[in-house]
Image (cartoon, rainbow over all chains, first blue to last red; front, side, top):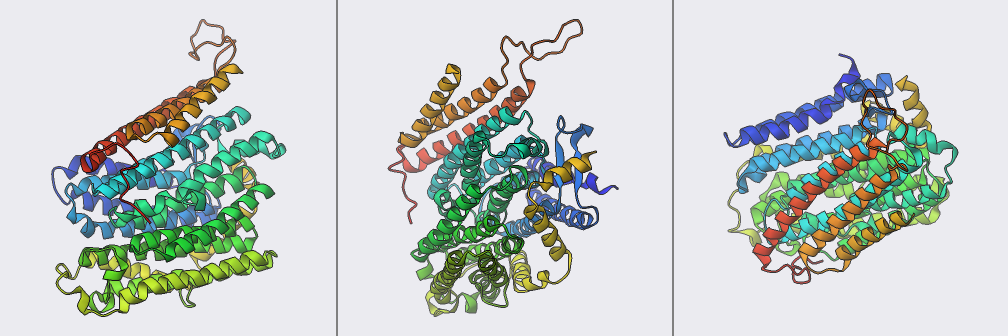
Length: 502
Length: 112
């Protein structure tokens, strides 16, 4: 099989699973969990196979329906998409496994799995789409599924958060749609490579700055960058625990960061004003998220604000734009996805056992739930940036890149926020993990050995602890280096795509 | 030109409605208006002076068609808008069941 024929399966498999679950979920109870697990494992396999083919072929294009672009819609996988797909599907597969046990507290679990698969179809679609409107449609599919998933528990707070998120996010989507309309009016095409080709000559046109502002607001909200982050902590508070895990690990990375960088670096071409705006957003996110996380007593809100802060690091690296900084950002996407999903899963397990989200009421997790305790410890250490774990290396690379590019102030802020992160994680997690154990007597009821809940956390903890090995030569290293080249070369993407279309 | 300005005014009405109104249903209506304004704008930029519907027939001379692509795009976008609208209305019904009010200033259990 020619490798580019694998690309549509990234969308087909989760989408088919979503509808199969609707058909079979009503008949037999476990059908939803089984189909969703198989589908997510399959799409992880496909993304892994694609990653190996990317190393060999460089860029793969699938023309949907055999129509040549710009009339047809292409699905394009290059090394950057392949890296993002690999991370997203890895996290999604583990979150699906984790969900199997977790969602037993709800009725109609098949609806949950159906929505989860719909969301993954959207996420994979955003990563492979080569057409700007098509990307918008996939983005909307993923967002719509997420609004419903946030409200899945049907608690008052969850509904409120879901409404807030849906309103904010749909305003952002409308901005994006108007941006697409302006772009279409200007370039007469919706294909990203052809848009890039048209813009190449006249990049300083006034309309481009207007379109850039619309897209920055739209994707900034999806990525939860600081002025647009208000939905994130609310949406994470009362939703089912796997949702913050997948949202923090996959959704804000693909829908926000990936789509933003793909458009601004590869299609529009990075300009100085945009990179300064991104640096500003990044600094505000890092500091704002960090400071707001300090005062939180709810464990999920703390982790949510921490996500805002870490997204700041990722955007900072991209905005600086030197190869080292971009490499650091890509590595931080990976490390943050793994560690934050791990922490949210841990928080979910803790909550389910202790029946509370309040940090002050939780203590002695390690002695009562050793697996959850130790894996959460590894996740927290990774995010704080303690040396042997993943987060340290990516933050170190970003800080070095700041110094190398001459931004000493930014390097100082990045280092300061890292210390801030350590402080609030230490403040929250030390009493939770190591505190006295007698305070949680009585509440422990369902502390059975739950293999399906523990296994994803153990896998993520191992990956997070051994993350530095990915800097050694191997598939991740090659992919990251290729993806760095794709981003740093910027609009060379256009000629690469147009060249391989012929 | 004036028609684009009217379209912008429609969009602003929707945005004002989302930002300033306190009733959940009015916010939803505001989002609807915004989406329609965006769709209308997309259709407008595809319009050609004196253009006719882009349907190809054998015996017709094609000299002045409107752009068909925005119409296809807007159809998709309307479907997405419909899905969003249904979801929002369903959520607001549930919110009413829990809070017994549509006033967003009273729906404020999430803090921090």
